[in-house]
Image (cartoon, rainbow, N blue to C red; front, top):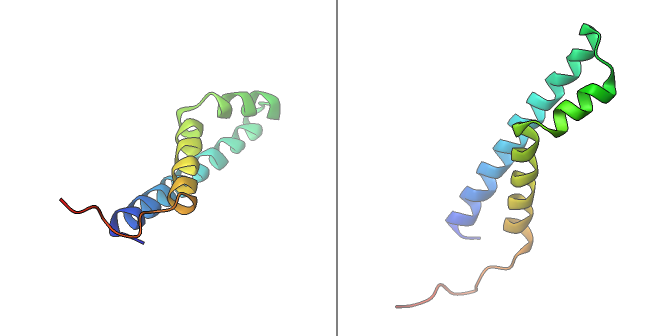
Length: 74
């Protein structure tokens, strides 16, 4: 695994952890009187959710797309 792939893997993993933590905090809105349908709609329309989806796709690409066995020579 190259250094670049490892760096992208770690960055995307960190984004996943941070955005999931933020999205879990939105569930506290139920204590303020919102029902879970309103909270779910709010979560799905938030920027954090889009970042989560993008980071998951990036993480899957870094793991499952094969890397070249040798770097190209110039």
